[in-house]
Amino acid sequence: MLTRLAAAVAVLGLLTVAPGPDLAVVVRRAMAAGARDALRTVGGIVTGLLVWGALTAAGLAAVLAASPTAYLTVRLLGAGYLVFLGAQALWQHRRPAPAAADRRGTAAGGAWRTGLLSNLLNPKIAVFYTGLLPALAPPRLPAVWGMALLVLVHVCLTLGWLGGCVLLLSKVRRVLERPRVHRALGRTTGVVLIGFGVAVAAAV
Image 1: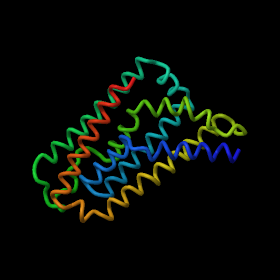
Image 2: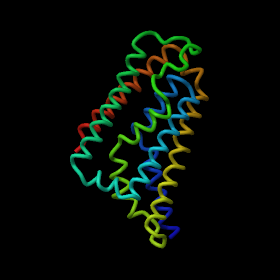
Image 3: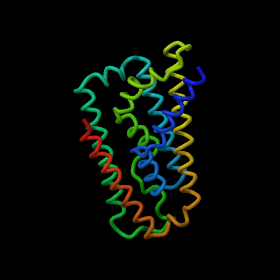
Image 4: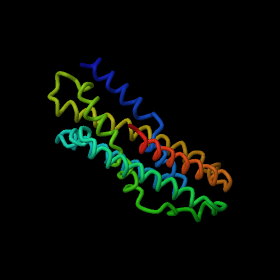
C-alpha cells in the first residue's frame, strides 16, 4: 500500500509542477497586485480541485469526461477565459508600468474567483481525476476514501508548489517591481496565458 501511495504522490507531484494555466494565473496576480492577492488565487485553485474531487466522487466528472459535447463546451469556456486573462494582462501593460505603490488592486476581479474559474474550466482535471486517480488509489481502501486521499494529497502539493512560487516572487519583488521588468513580465505572462488558451481550444 505504501509503495502504491508513493507512486501516486510522485505522479501527482509531476502533474503539479508541470507548467500550466494555474501557475501562469498565479504569476499574473502576483505581478498585478502582490503576494496576498496571489495567495488568494492559489486558494481559489485548490478550491476548484476540491470541487472536481467532489464531482468525481458523485460521478458527475465522469459524465463530463465521457460526453464529447460537454467536454468541448467546458474546454472552449476555459480556453476563452485564459485568452481573456492574457489579453487583460497585455492591455494593462501596454504603457509604462506605474509605481509599485499604485499597482495594488489593478487586476480586475476577485483573486479567489480567478483561481477558482481557471481550475473549474479546465476539463483535463475531470479526465485526470476520473481516468488516472482510480488506478493510483490504494487498493486496500474503499474507492471513495482512496480517491479522497489522493485529492487531498493533490491539494497539499498544489498549495506547497504554488505557495512556494508566490513566496519566491515576493522575495525578488524589488527587482520585479522595476518598471521595465514589471512591464516585460506582465506582457510575457499575458502571451503565455493566451498561448495556453489557444492550446486548450485546439486540444483533441
